[in-house]
Amino acid sequence: MNQYVGALREHVKAKGWEKIWWMHVGDEPQGASGRDGWNGIFDKVKAVWPDVKIGDATFHDPVASEVAKREDITIPNLLNYEWKPQAFDEARAQGKDLWLYNCNIPTQGFLSRFVDQPEYYQRLIGWLAAARNANGHLHWAFNNWNISMDDQDVKGDFWVVNPDRERNLLERTLRLESMRDGIEDWEVVTILKKTHPDLATDLAKALASSPGTFTGDVTFLDRIRALVLDAAAGKPLAVRDLAQTIKTGAAADLGAQYQVDGVYLRWGAGQPAEYTIQTSYDGVSWVDAARRTAANGGEDFVGINGKARYVRLKSAAPELLSFKVAGPRLTRQNLVGGKTYTKSWTPPARFPDSTGLESTDGVIADNWGDGRDYAIQGAAGEKKAFDVSFDLGGSKTVREVQVQGYVEYSGYRPDTVQVLTSDDGTNWTARGATLTRPNDASGNRWEIEFAPVEAKHVKVAFTRTFIPSADGVFLDDIEIY
Image (cartoon, rainbow, N blue to C red; front, top):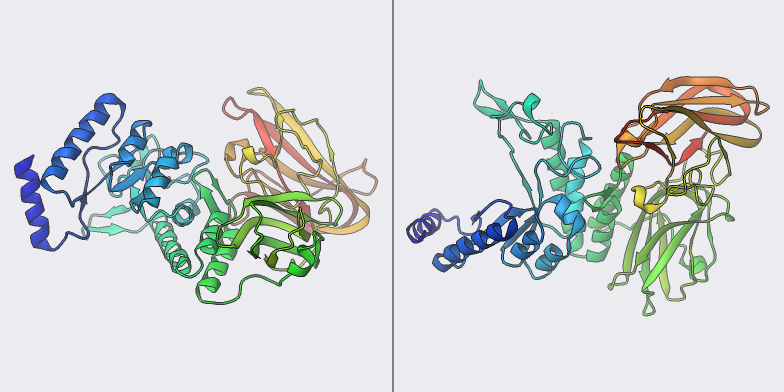
């Protein structure tokens, strides 16, 4: 060990690589023997080369958190970081590097880089890193081609790029380009952090606050990215300042339905420890769109990704200096925004439609734990037909229905979605095509268009054959235009 590490140290110095060199001790140490072995080799390396940076990918706790206290570069697996981020965040606060790490885990509803996940998942890893102040990312098996794609348990675990054997080069992939886009996004957020650290961090959190809590809407990603670029360039943020109205506890009338991407707040000396932002379509029925702990710097951005005509703070805030709503005015009106509806079933107690407005409150769910979804459940192999119907309150011209899919786990979606209209609420006519999968840019939303028709009632009908790994369907927002 002394001979090898000493010779390696001299070689690295001779090459001028000292500032960029780092090295491993042992991959993913686990258990008492793994911890003791890792510590023993770490001590031997540092005894010969005290200044060398050591970092290892970790997953198994409590060893992962213990190793983080000694590593120069802490590298938790994203799933590990989802469960127990504290030790790694503390290490970063002490000035250590924090890199996030992917391998064959996590899967399903977590950010990773597999071929059956949307490409923007890789891009969002850059935003997650910016949100959590991480400054690196470790990909296992960038070009490990000794195992074919067909033989991989998790497709894409070993191949991030493809081999160009004829030219002895690499072939780029969509996943690689998406990852590079995320790196560039991280760089822009980092530029903004130099002048507005709290604002920059909050904007990143609007897209990805943890490995399992992130947006499923690429249009929202585009809009938040535009805000970051404008802010980094010194341009003013958001739509218009509503502070004089909001500080008294009143609601701000935006004058029309808006896409509400978030709210920018600037506080005076009396900054509250916590606050809640509410939105509404009608100024009567309100939904808690976001709850926040205020930042110390007096400057907050609260990402929402919703639609509304009214916005307010739940409590009066006399020390509020600025309250700006970010997002464009909608070019058309959602006919059922904030309105009640009828379900053909009673949701289970565990996943109820607690407000009776979960499908029309305008705020998109992040994950099942935020309570914004409601469900229908069934036994494995059982097929069910179910529907949600709306009374438009009179004859309206209808030409499109949008149904937000459950973002976190795609297995908990309906098999088919169909739109029907009626003049009397009894006799129904099918409109548009029956869709078997989401068809928007994000792959999370059903957008069903049809020839304009006059109708008093609209029904969205679903079917689902339940399977052992997904005994339910989660429903979120439904919009009618």
